[in-house]
Length: 484
Ligand code: NAD
Image 1 (cartoon, rainbow, N blue to C red):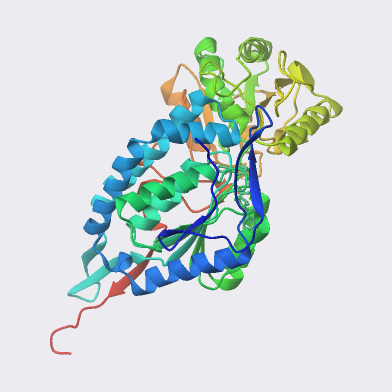
Image 2 (cartoon, helix red, strand yellow; image 1 turned 90 degrees about the vertical axis):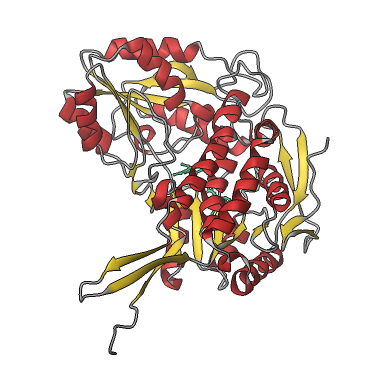
């Protein structure tokens, strides 16, 4: 079965591209061509925005009741549930995520999020009547924000697409999705399911394209809100454009989260947990906890345990169910991570596992060796900058206050964990670290609760009722008072 596509999804049909330019999807494992798809140009974005604008301004989608939209989205969710294995395979093929991760977090978690948004929409206060301060009642409505531009990254492409498409559609918005050029295939598979579910023409439009065309979409006058997940650098540019145009914007950006290992933690359980929280998706995760904080007394024990754990992880073909760490998405990411590994050594950190060069047994593919650095100072660039690969830094602390200070000494504030036998002490640490999400002895996102970042990790929140609110405008209606 070919994964090639020859058209965009615009206005409910597969629409011919404006130009003959193609994006090549290359397997990060074999470096062979997986598929070609048309590369979006500004004219394709214009057509997609026009379709979304029409579908919003003329309906029927925004005029339907929340219950009617929920019914259509529930059909979509049912169809999505039947395609999880195919979706996981497509994502592994396009960006090299280990199939163990694709069949857990890439596809099934996207579906669970969709189901969770359906439940939230069922209980959402779309229109409420409040006692007015001046007497009588006031009506507070939550109405669709309008036409949304959704820009997801390549690392968790469906997860970050569903986190925008589901709440936007449930709120009655229409949407233009611009998938990253590395990962167009999963979105087009999603489009087939939306079409089959009976989502009206123009409500969802999908044009895969690169950064410049993304900029055109963000600045487009037909867009009311931008929902972006990606790097902090791109987020700043997008926020500047939205600020100038007073567009609504939500940004899910980078991270450099810390896992604090307290002395009473069960080290083997902690190491098992860190395999996921620090190295999920081959380290290509915004929430990856890549700074491991250990007390000076316990430092050598933590370094040794981490070295043993990471060196035992299975690196290789992402389609092999046993693989824990696959290739990076692109050669430029492999080069970027290798530069950071060299930089860490120049900065005086000590490689205890890994280092530059191909992992054993592999001679092609965009792999790096999972690497653990010891003797890291939190001011080093490897401790401050997002590397986005399987590279961990172990940083010593004096006491719990010092650990919290180090965890907070970052421009980012997305996630974090504490590992301890004392649940109350863990919660105390959780309350003091300035990040949008935090785990005690685990890191599992929950779709009922808001997700997002403090500081340079973003603006706004996804998931939970807050994630649905992000696609609404508030309107207060003062019903006519008797006698006026
Ligand atoms: P990126 O910022 O380079 O690209 C993300 C998307 O934005 C792509 O679709 C790209 O084509 C587009 N884009 C880039 N610049 C743009 C601009 N100026 N205007 C419009 N569109 C633009 O990021 P990436 O390398 O694809 O993804 C990795 C980054 O994403 C990491 O920093 C990671 O931490 C972050 N991320 C954050 C979250 C989160 O929820 N906070 C989740 C996943 C990834």
